[in-house]
Length: 182
Image (cartoon, rainbow, N blue to C red; front, side):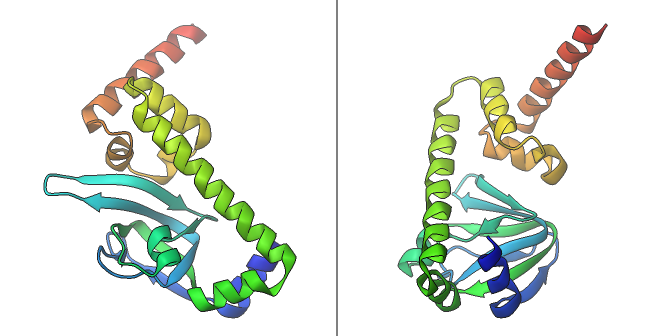
């Protein structure tokens, strides 16, 4: 990670985007990888009927439209700031040169890709979990700070439930927690 942080300081540009501003829109090829210094980003698909949130990124995370970045194809996703966000932006050419620079960097990149695959598998399990409360529990086990970083309406979209259902589940958990302490 130290080598990557060095890459950030030597080959990245800093970009700040305002709340609701788009970092990437559907149909554009993503030629950058982003390191979130502050703020939060949501990645979503837009269908004819709804926006479907598929990923979040917040402080100290790396984000990109991975298939677009790797394959030089148009992105299927939108990436939008949930709040004012400051990013380190590294071009694909600089990033890939960094990866090829040493075995240590290549191993770090392999670990990054392994983490992405694992996250994707967890996401697929989340989507297949029938109970909304179990989906919420699974996500909170992985990201306990989620409600501090992301508005509830986006979390509900990510969990494939209405904001009202999410609110009911959270209120029921709060009631249960209160009952346990009395």
